[in-house]
Length: 617
Image (cartoon, rainbow, N blue to C red; front, side):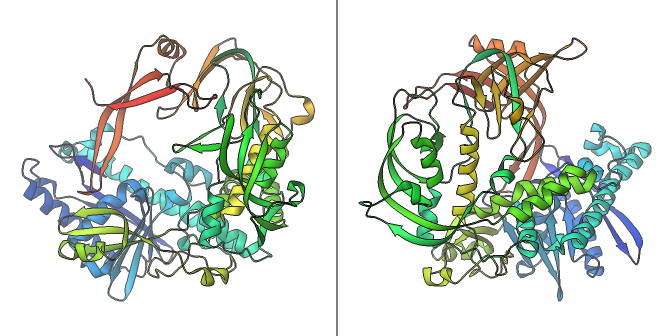
């Protein structure tokens, strides 16, 4: 728990921990020496904070056998900042190691005590749920009371009743997380022989289950050349809007779109490289092609994606890109033509059918934790295969040695604190000859201490999955009734036939449950509002605007945006991280929403909504 000092920077005032020894639960809270705190004196603040952390580190050092792994919910963006800063102040540099991702979020922090190592890990990175949701999922008591804003003030130490409430609230966070993660760990160990303590994220969890229980074939690791080529054709889901305003709409969503298409045939082993296309037949080719595309000018809805200035668009005209062969076959029927430049041909295999069937069967008949696990594992496996080939590792160096290391490493980012720097390094790929001998059946676990470990991804699989998803959604866009589409959902003016609606993988479900959307505005990708009348005759407004809390933008506010006015949205508590000083501030802020009209470079360019982050009065 933390409170702001006189400059608004949060300082830790309490650390809680919960663990079990011989079946007995131990719950402990460490609090700051509040009587010595002087918010106008930085020196006393630092002493009090350092003493708080020293008490905690001394305690866990005495119980290293119980603290081999410590889960922290939101280590990445909040608690890890305080913890890492404290260790840099408290411990010898050679006793600290960390993994920081390319968004400056902490994945893991290790602290070596004697011959033992304590590792702090982010439970939120494995289970991306709020603590209460996580506890509810695994059937344990979550928070027993709501957060009291008075906890965010040093005066709480002078109020006995309030301090008791604060202590109970703080302890319950650790108690609840400990119970939830213990049940989760036992569940995964019993069902899949996978230990959550050895996992860093949901995608690595899914991959380990797949590799341990379902993988029957070796999955080759692509060379850096092939990886770079195919990655140009790795696009996300198709999201676009076709009308600004519409009435009487139907809203459908695909049941588990990515798990559904992962049952399709996948690229496996590289068979051939094509540069001569004199006797080429697209229908007989399976793999990835670099082509010059020509899209028919009279097409109503372009469906082939293209990356332009860092964004994915769906243009008409001509351009050069890399695409999965099955997507090219699908758009040929719509009048697209191609000039072939280069291709990588693959063999075919079914990789994920057993895995997908297993978890979907569980999802259909289960509730609670089993259903949550099934949904999580269904939706997170494919993402691992699209990981970039860069291997990231973190090196902690003294300022006096910084120039030496900068001259010898590829550095992605630098976190500076006091007289130390944490360098996020990019380790180059292994030689092609070495990569050829690697397969997914090898031990893939991320070992940051071994910079020779290769990131064992396979972007051909990830690119095929997302391409298959776009192909599946393509069929719903071509009859002229579509108004807006997301990766796996559609707003349309005509109902889908009953043959397309169902509970099976890949079938559509009616998000409105038989009701119609009365009216809707679509102002951009992930920016829309709609209204419907419920069974009680009440008008319900739903809104989605990127960067703003769901349903917080009203219908009237959208109409003001359309008239050219700006909308101010209050955000009471927004977190600001300073990775140079390892400080966190929590401030009220406001977002200014404006509807802007962009000048299209391609015929399908559109306007959109722009959000400005302001601290205006």
